[in-house]
Image (tube, rainbow, N blue to C red; front, side):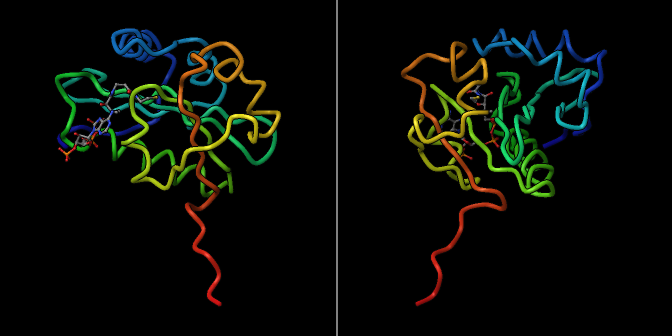
Length: 157
Ligand SMILES: CC(C)(COP(=O)(O)OP(=O)(O)OC[C@H]1O[C@@H](n2cnc3c(N)ncnc32)[C@H](O)[C@@H]1OP(=O)(O)O)[C@@H](O)C(=O)NCCC(=O)NCCS
């Protein structure tokens, strides 16, 4: 993929927000995540430029939003997005977090990571009360979830 993944720092916030805005994704709250829990925000750097970003917004206990996943348009389809999400999933799985997301654009991209469509009403209240669920994403956005550790296989009978 030719890019290096690392935790974000406060110095990256403006570049992350620019990537999100260019992809018409919300920037609300991303700066707070980077400042408060920098290991929950990941950037991909290439030739000195931030070319991709993504974050976990951990809420309550045991759940988080996977949010702000973006790859600069001229860097897409080289595996950066997948590598970035896998790093965030490893972080989430190490803490046993169920993950939720909302998307209007990528509901056919996230299933490769074990996300399945979810009923918004079934999200735990800590997730339902996030800015993204309440106001940040349109009601037509698809909600998806991935249980901690990935999709659970049905028990053998
Ligand atoms: C979705 C996104 C993060 C994928 O990043 P990426 O680095 O291009 O992804 P990868 O290189 O790991 O994977 C590319 C593959 O996924 C496919 N793909 C990319 N975006 C897709 C989408 N929205 N829906 C379905 N498939 C998609 C590509 O066609 C490609 O398939 P191929 O390998 O068969 O050619 C990137 O396209 C992006 O930033 N989109 C705009 C922002 C967005 O929609 N974010 C997600 C919502 S929060």
